[in-house]
Length: 585
Image 1 (cartoon, rainbow, N blue to C red):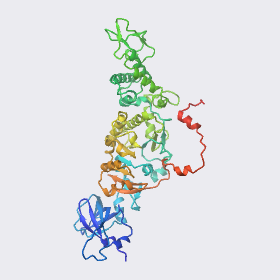
Image 2: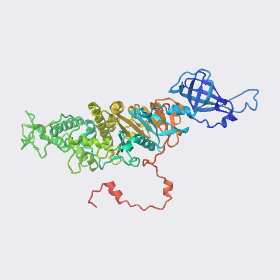
Image 3: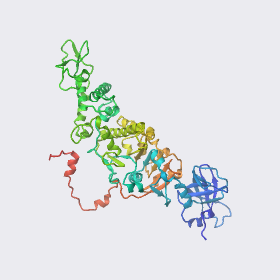
């Protein structure tokens, strides 16, 4: 008769961090079903109706050295090292441990019923799942959806680990309408914005609202002071402080000029003319003033223009300093390089989506268009959608961080005022997904990434109270801002091959269960460790398959090389590359 695990195992050591179990019948151990594996669950009980759940961490052969060893005693015995993760008391599972009576009276494999009690004890309205237990594919691993999405999420994994498919699966489950909602033909209330660096997620979300450089509505006047200065000011220049002071003065005055009914400051999202601000800097660079009054000395001055706005005017000339009563202005000749830099940006066709955006009727966006601009990002435009994908692939790299910062900040500010005004009795929560996040929120303090880091770090620290959560996705977690990752309460960690990344993630994880975390470098594709507040115990899961996958598959080089030579038709490619204008050859 086949023996049970309890018949061939006994606890020989109990400590706060480890439980040792001896297997004293190796032959029967080999015939066990199911097999005991690294990561398997063991139940250890006493006579007081208390049971511990432990995870198999490692095993080793026990050395037996005696003078009178029989052939039987020479067979190797095993010691299984386990790490406690929780306990059953009165039939209910609790994370963490209680003190078990020593010695325990029974050691057994956790049953199907035990595992179901652990993983499926979440209230129905909070249940969320995207995978099965790796050690038992009959157990659907359930997490608390409120705690999972309501607290920031880190998704990490090396290239080829299945990271993109895992992200897609999580989001697909999140936007999945209930049976009743499908019957009524309405969407659920999920709102997800994906910052997609490589254009991978369109195929995974065919009904998503897709925003690319070709249809992005993001006028420059939405930028705040730091974003504007990152784009136009060179901080290393000797007179950068003068550039900042006059640029700031010009922007504020121009906002006042074009928004007489608004109370504006440097950061107010209100229209101003970049062309006029450019002209203001040019005029300051040439301005002469009266010695005694310090007023501008302008030839044939248009008296209909107010003094405070005169420097926005084109084609004005200044009195030369030859006259005894005239001297050069405070910034005369200071801004030659600054003016060239602004002109270079304005003349760069790649930046037209940001610096010269136009509506379909070719008119400029103004302050009155603010709601329309924001609605494109939050899924409330004409075609409502749970998912908005911002395809960053065509965004010039030098303004990528500014674009991410600006959109992030707009959504945060919108959510802030939404909560402040309490327009709805129901909440409108947003999940912002940053794919390949190490590219624009790095750990280093480079000035280039200052604004985007500040925007995302603010959400990491304050966003949840305003209904905004983050999902930070990266293959190089050790290169991401500590401030942002340290705010994540839930992690989905896939295979990580880089030792630096492995150690970094282990330090960040809210649980110190080495039986789980030591598996990081050897996880199979589509396997993931889930750790955090949303799950009863840290677990290795196999992520469920999806039919609509992101376009992230690697090219099979050998397979493609063995095919016949492909004749390339590259005309359209070159036109797209060089942005050949319509109507031109």
